[in-house]
Length: 217
Image (cartoon, rainbow, N blue to C red; front, top):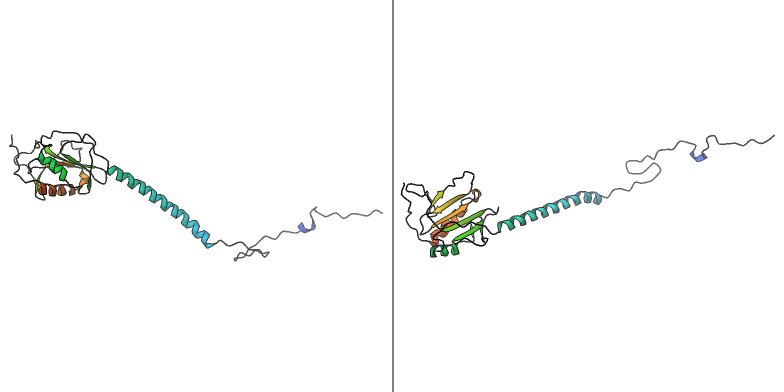
């Protein structure tokens, strides 16, 4: 009789004939077969949290610096001013006054005019770049008549001449008790600081005179 060969039942080798045991790991990272999972270093976790925060802080600082530089640049730009009638602008009174005006009026810093500069005038800019303009030697305000209300600030009599256009938020104040009429135009956000400081300069540099309002009619 011939011999009978023995053939494995499923065609797999002997090592794979039984079910595989899953790799179960305990709470300390040890696997059931004795292996270990590498622990994550606390430094890696801290770095993963801190690095994005540091980068964000750097970006915010750079953005703020760029914005501040732009604001400072705008606040130092020369002022463009139109020339208006000012018969006394070239007088000795006005030339002396403009020369002696302070470098700041309130929070506004003195800046140059775009040429040609109007005579008898000085320009200032607030931190938000809005302008404050002082003019000397103007004619009397047309609405400065007998009986109008005046406001005294640091020894100077001021007349407020409202703009006929209600959309204009800036205001013009005219000192009416000096040898020449002196006006200051400032935005609504300018506060009272410019008028107070200008009043001090007028009191120190120019002699007071009696106001001369025009008769009614």
